[in-house]
Structures are given as C-alpha cells and as structure tokens.
Length: 436
Image 1: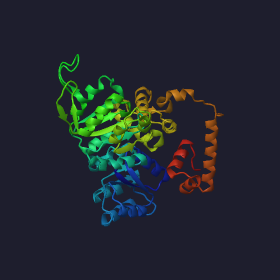
Image 2: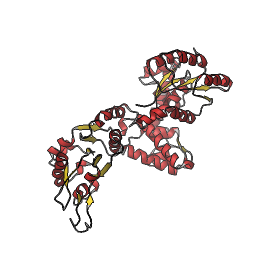
Image 3: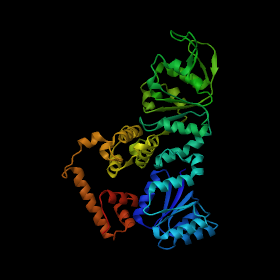
Image 4: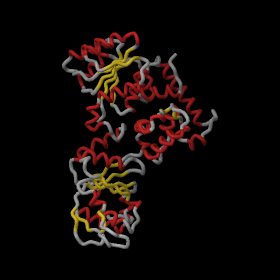
C-alpha cells in the first residue's frame, strides 16, 4: 500500500497539478475541493498526512484544523498547510495548535514532497516505499505477494516480455519472505550448455580439466533463500531432467562427486517465452513445466500500464540526481508527451536506459523529447500538414467547443468527452488551452 494523502485545495489547476505530482512521487492521493468534503473523507478513512490550503471556499484553514482536532472520528494526521504571504500569521497559529508545518506560495512541489516523505517515514519503513508501480495491474500483482511469501517453498513462475521487470518482482517476493536470506540469480540463456550443470550444482576438485578445487553451485549458494532461474525457457533439454529431480528431491550431486547434498530454497523461475508452446514442440519437459508452474504471475508490458511510465522515469531521474548531484535534471512537457506516446518495445529496461542517456547527455537541466528519444525525434516531421498535426488541431478545437458549451466546468466537460478530469487538464496544458 502507498502512503495515503488527503489533499484539500479548491483551485482546480493547482489541485490537479499537486495531485499528479504526488502520485508520480509514489503517494496515493484523495483530492477534496472543500473543507466539508475533506472532513467527511477524514471520518471515513485513515490518512498518513493531510495537505490543505488555508483559504477554502466554505471553511478557513484554522477552523478546519480546529474541527479536525476536536472531532474524535477524524483522528489527527500530520497536517501541512499552504498559505499566501498575507496568511502567515494564521499558519503560525496553526503550528501552535499542532499542525506539522506550512509552506508559502508560490509553492515549490519538491519541498512539499520532501516534507511528506519525512512525515510518512514510519509508513515508508513498513515497506510501502517501493511499490511495483502505480498502475492497477501492478498494484494487483503487488497485493498477491504477501500471501505467496508466507508459503516459502512453493515454486513461482513469472512470465512477461523481456525488460518488463520480472526480476524486480522476484526480489520483491524475496524481501517479503526473508530479506536476510540469500538471493541467487542466474540467466539460463547466458550460461553455455556444457557449463550449466556445474554452474547450478557445483563441482568437486578434479571433476574436469581446470577444476583445481571444489566449488559450490548456485543451488547450494541459495540454501535457505531464493533461487531465481531467469529465462528458464532457454534451459537445455538435456539439463531439464536433472533440474526436475533436484527440485523434487531437494538434493543435488556435484559434478564429479557422488555424495548427495541436501538443499532447501524457494524456486522462482521467469521466462519471456510461451512454455506451453515449447512443451508442444518437445523443447520443454511437460513434467518440469507443471512442477515450476504452481503459482504463475504475469508482468504486463509497459505499454499496457501507462500510469507507471512517468512515475518510473521520475524515479530514474531522482536516482541519477542522488548519484550525481551536479547533474540534477527534470522532465520538460515535450519529454512527458514523448514518454507517454512511445510504445516501449524494450519495456522498463528501455525506459531506464533512455532516461539514463538523457540525464548524461542533455545539455540543459530540462530534459526534452529529443534527449529521450533522439532516433524518433530525428525522423519526425515538423510540417503542420502532417497527419499528427491535423489530428492535434481537430482534437484541440473539439475540446475547446466542449469547454465553452459547459461554461468551462471541468467535470461536466470531462464526462461529455468520456475522459477523466486529470486527462482533460493534461490535454489543456499540452494544447495551451486557457480559460478566458
């Protein structure tokens, strides 16, 4: 679960902007546009923190906070107030009443995020600081892992396209099971066929030319922990029978040895291949398939979970900034549009490499589309007669007419267009549509 934030802000543009930024930073946000709505939400749900403007259309911030303090049904989450220069005295009074902090306008989102992370530190230490993603698909996947972790020896098969994050899921499962135990990973496709048995099971001294001393294999190294066999679909057929026996008996024999060695581990396999088709083609043992496929988890490709794209990109940029503080970067609007419109055939791995390259090579602190995807940018046309430009102009005109017909009321317009308020706000921002 993500840290839960209650955002109280009556300005639609600022509210949308703050909500979007906090979601990208890994928070779950409920946005309320009035104090009364916020009090109702606070009675229904427990939040990790509250962010509230002092000036609200129905209840002033100090009165709202007094009601929160005096209402036993709301509890009192740590609260940050946003204030203009003229309301600093009110903010100071709120601090005396027990508010956590206040920030002045114009608001610096980075400062707000930092304060919220400090306030939610206890929540983050419980393991919620590293979710698999913000998309519903990844959150559903994340929600399954604690139950699987409780059954420590049940095999798990993780499927999905290359670069989609299968090892990340395996490491998450390991952390939930016992982070102190060994995590041993091997890419079955990367080990030569004549070496894979010794790699997995180890070898005794003198087992073959060059074996000058005994060596433990990956099965022994993973004893008590998790063994991750990536690209199991590329395991040589000659090795699959030996692997099946080791999984069933929890005993291995080193190459060149004759002493059985008991091992205890959780087996997690991953593949981008269709194992059912490989079984039909006679390239993967059916009995091994059913042995490793007790629980199957499917990691969707990045193009099917667009909610994760900007979130992941921001995280990669933040990690680069932590490693190289002098090279701090941020995403420009064209970069955000490019990220969301790209198909990402290489999935998260491609996204990470694109962001890393842009962080290193972008000449300015603002990353734009051509920094992220130079190949695509160089082949795109700047002509206003292109199909994309015509479609963009038509869409802009349609949105503008809808806004005018509904008196610029965002919710009604979004409902008419069949999109969310957030999507409408993003399109207005990108197309530079401003209310008269």
